[in-house]
Figure (tube, rainbow, N blue to C red):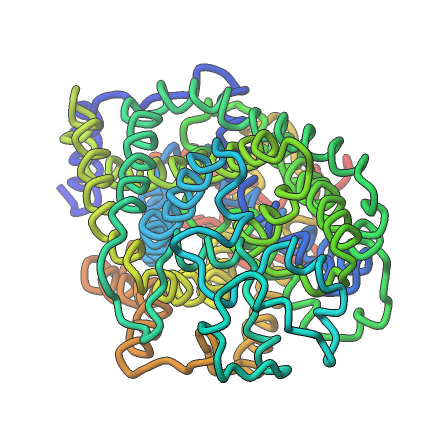
Length: 623
């Protein structure tokens, strides 16, 4: 018996002992799970800010160029790969091309990063949600124990309308605090720059309790309890696998849309909403010539579509073989981009109202990332009558937007581990224990993020962990492996076998040339334009710099590492796809360009080659 036949017998024997793999109860569960994963906090706080920053409506041009040239091709490739192989994010690549199994491990490293730090945002949202039931909102006043002498609320600003001028009159300070507190105080422009809003002080001094010396500091236990609650909710959403996940997403994926609609209609009816929408979408065509605008568009597409994380492959793997993933992927991509644009209307209409109400430029209140969701927007909501009600709605939306993205990431990791050890982990009760272990470990590793220096660590991991560089390189490798090694024509044949018709041929050329080239160019531009990363104006210390380098390198090291593993194990089979993968045209060339055969079928004989060429000529004649 040859080595190959022994391997095949071992695989078949393992399959007999492996418990069956679960499937989605219906296509709706798959669609809602995918929508819950890709539609998250980035749609609400990242896309609107980038649109405003990069030329308004003009930003949509590079955004859609990247979407159609990179986002949709990679999104569809990963989903179809999971459905075709019925495997998670690691074993799917092992079946397609054992040499590049490391691509799957690289994506799981990214998922581990997300599982540890992304859920911290949910802890913040829970903390804000609990405090939203107070009236007045605790972040709208300056008379709390966490406020400093530099805190000045809306009433203080309105009592001195010239506050934002260089010749500002700061005498009103003596009316709100003891004059002794300000003895010798220099009321100059430097003081003006130090003024803090109550919303900012609530975020920094109450929620985060930020340490000013960049030390880790003590754990904020009230925030740690919120983190624990977030993990408990996440655990019970997915502990039974897709049976529980598929039911939970009916609520978690649809409820944020209801909240977003309510906030949108309230926002556009506020005075000043038009001003905010003008800032959001008014086109500045000069920005099209700025390479940074194109770079921002590319990174936003890759972040918002959850590519290169193994998540899409994991969710697709639970589909039935004949599910129309082609139609589903295009529909989901349209929904995701439409949600991003629509969320911008809800955000900027309210910010426009705040700018008019306070009589300040919108640039003064606009910020990116968590600052938009936890400082700027809450400040705007505090100005609306019934502010507590609107704050509850907003933070419920933030919570559910992040929740389904979080538990789907955990599902992806659990699926990948289960598929690596199917005989052990598909037994009754094993799934619940595995998810519990993941939750406990991620909670413990997440505790440093809720310390007094946690926001600095959060910023570091957010920038260097699931960084654009790592994701773009993984995307380049993914498309190249499928198109050039496994074979773009063969993969399109597999998709045709699943959905009943052949996808657009343009996908083949996007996978072969366009997507990898754009990803590489974006990486090169990012490296050339790279600037030292700073946190609040301070450069990284040696330890932080080493951690940043490790975060970036860890996923990428997996790819060459497993190439060497494949070379050591079996060099002859390292680029051969698994024999148990269904092939409808086994003798057809793997890749052709302009009717020229680039790669023949594996093990193709001269006679089968002639038959394959004849069948290709017949298909071409039909077309």
